[in-house]
Structures are given as structure tokens and as C-alpha cells.
Image (cartoon, rainbow, N blue to C red; front, side, top):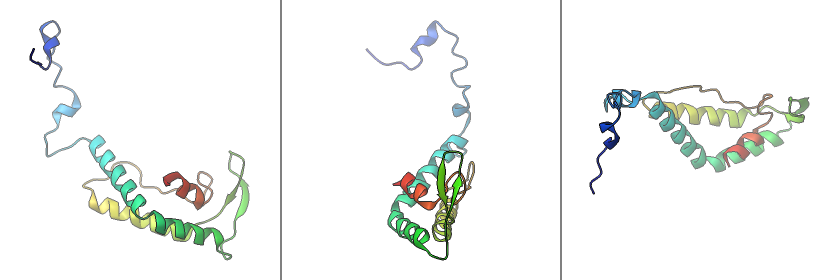
Length: 129
């Protein structure tokens, strides 16, 4: 038995089978979903590659006596809110390098560190670990 794509078309109206947006793009113009996946995987690869460096900067930010933390209610309980300049700089550099390598950037490029959503850098490092 030979496989025939769209064999069900003999009974259904299959004039729409190539109208899906995926089929409208030539190989030169790729859909935004492709760029989003490519940029996400590239960024994750770069973060994983630099994880040891990020971990060391995280420790430096958390233990820096000139960078104290404060206890705040983040809406998810009391947490240590602390700025993380070293880790933030490295993360921004990783993001910039990734943006330069991919053809096009889709979506947000905001890095959340030291705010109510991500109160301190240990949350970020644990997320990517």
C-alpha cells in the first residue's frame, strides 16, 4: 500500500490544504514562530554555556556588602529584594550577542532581575539551572 498525502481529499474539499499560513511562506521568508523558536533556543544555549560564570556573578551579587537586600511582600509572600548588577550586565550581554546572531528578534527582550517578579538573582539562576 502506498502512502498518498491528502488521501482524504477525494471525499472532502481540500482546496484549503495549502492556505494555512505556514504554506504561504517561501523558504526565504520564514514565519515569526520559526524566529521565536530559533532565538529562544539560541539564548538558552548561550545561558547554559555561561552558567558557571552566571552562577559566580550571582554569588558575588548576593554576598556583596555594598548591595544590601530588603524584605518586601512581592504578592507571593515575603522575599529578599536585591539588585544584581553583575548578573544583570552579563545577562544583557548574552541577550545582545544572541540578538546579533539571529536574523530577526520576535517578542520581548526584557530581563527581569531585582524586582517584584524576580526578587533576587538566585531565582533567575535556579530557573535556568
